[in-house]
Image 1 (cartoon, helix red, strand yellow):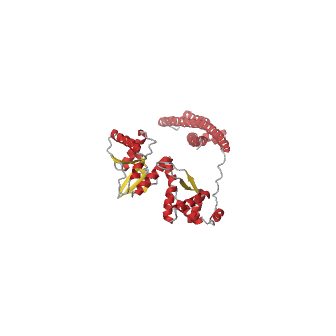
Image 2 (tube, helix red, strand yellow):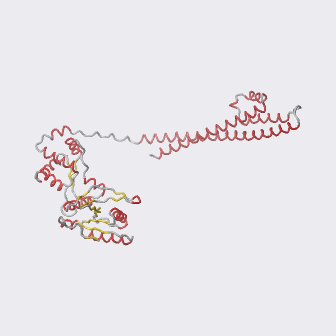
Image 3 (cartoon, one colour):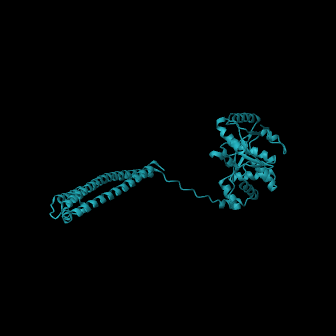
Length: 399
């Protein structure tokens, strides 16, 4: 909300409060005037009514003038002799007159105070209404300066293009590439060629040719991957046209790309590439691998998002995959605490090389020693994993 809108809301709230207060004061002033009328009528009777008639409309008689008339009636009653009364009655009437005079003074003061407060509040209300009008004018001017929001672009309909594309002789092979990407969310070209070849019985070279045709047709975007160890692989992503085509072919929405999901979670192409590569090796070694970012709630409002979750033989490991680019101990302290809590006292770390693994080991053990933590540290690296065979332990060190 803009500062101008906030200012207008504050003024409107203040104006409403003053209006309510003015209404309350007006009610109290009217009650005081009614009391003055009642006292005057009880004491003065016809004499008081005659005075009121001479003053005009009772609604327009000021409180001070009304009080003067009541006081005049009280004085007349107090000074007029009454031959029919006895001494005791005279004393009682005098006491009653004094009491009524005190009530009259109180009501007169209330009426005068109410009238004064009412005048002050009227001035404040007028000032607030003026300020509110000014602020609304400013807000209107500012709103006029803000450009209108852009008109949303309607979704592109590729129906005519699809009809023409579906007539090509390579359509069936191209269609398999699009459906495979949309159903799996896989993104690495090497993995896609290998798995799609096994699934469709096409040669990997043939799969590659269909990928090339999909790229040229604007169905697939190819990005350069990041090298971790060895040659980098290309990243394949369905374009807007590719996602539309997948929906046209299957009636479903394409699965989000695993690469985009990991990149959003980790903000680093290098770490994203390393996570995918580590997941490949653990799958090769017989582990079930969960690559999708998962957030786990930890005590005291903290959360933990392991880079990979792997399982085998009923045992679960929560992996932290570290590139070695950010090794500052203070920033990693909460991560190690969360990893230890979720892992039941166990911290599992994967690095790209043995040297980075050794540095991480030193940092984590120092952290644990300083805080008196009893932990088990499971360490490995990409070089070690590449040399492992199914049945071998994936852990280069356990401390």
